[in-house]
Amino acid sequence: MPEFIGCRQLENLPLSELVPYIDWSPFFLTWGLKGKHPFLLDDPEAGKHARELYEHAQKLLHRLIVEKNIQANGVYGFFCANSEGDDILVFADESREKVLWRFPMLRQQWEREGQESFRSLADYIAPLSSGKKDYLGAFAVTAGIGADELANHFQKDLNDDYSSIMVKALADRLAEAFAEYLHAKSRKEWGFGKTENLSNDDLISEKYQGIRPAYGYPACPDHTEKEKLWKLLDAEASTGMKLTESFAMYPGASVSGLYFSHPEAKYFAIDLITRDQIENYARRKQFSISEMERWLAPYLGYEAE
Image (cartoon, rainbow, N blue to C red; front, side):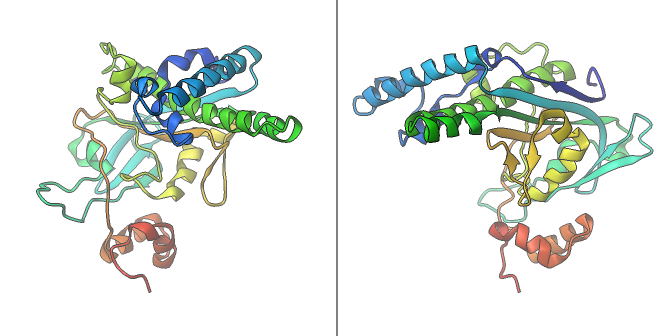
C-alpha cells in the first residue's frame, strides 16, 4: 500500500537533482548522431562531433542550473483503484463506494507469431470482484517552464540558433529525467521499491518493478484520456502544464502517465484495433464511433467509413 493517497506537488525542483537521471543517448539523436552514450563519445567517426556537442551541453546545463532560467514542476499521486473488465476504476477513498474516474483501456487483438496472451493495462489492477484493494499511480512533470522563452531569446535576440536548439534538447532530457526521478521516488513510497539499488543504466534499462505508460504510446494510444488524467491530478493548477486542443502537452518538455506496481507489468503495443473493439471502446468512453476512429486512426485494422 502507498504511503499516502491523493496528490503531492513538486514545485521548482532543483535541476541538479535531475542530472543523475539523464539518458544522454536520445540527446545525440536530436543532432542526427546515433549511438549509445557514453560509447558514442569514442566512436571513430562520430566521436569528435559527439564530444563537442556533449561539452557544449554540459556548459549550458550548468548555466541553466546556476541561473535557474527554466523551472521543473511536477505532481503525482496514488489512488484507490480496481479493474472492471477492461476499465480501471479510480475511487474517491478506501471505502471504494464512489467512482471518481473510469479509465477505459484497449486490449491487444492482433495476433503476432508465438503470442500466447492478449494484454490490457487493466490486467495489472486487481479486479473489483476479487475483493482485493489495489492502487493506481499517476504523474505529470515538466522541465520546460521558461524553456521556450529562453530558446526564443537565443534565436531572436542573439541570432544563436544553435543555443536555441540546445536549450530545447536539454529541457526534453531534463523532463524525461524528472519522470525517471519521480518514478523511483514513487516506487519507494509505494513500498515495493524501498530495496532498490539501481544504477542510472539500470534505470534506463527499466530493471525495476512496475511500469509508467504514457497516453499516446503503444499500450494506451488514446491521447484524449489525458483530459481525465489532468483532472485527477489537477495538473494545470499544480504545475502550469496545459493540454492543447489535440491533447498535446505544453510546455513541450513534459511527460505524464500512469504508475502500475504489478510485478508482472510489462510494456506492450496494442497494435491494430478491429471495428468491434472500437465500437466497444467508444461506448465505454461515451464517444461516437466516428470520433473514436478519428482519434485512433493510425491503429485501425480496417477501413473506416
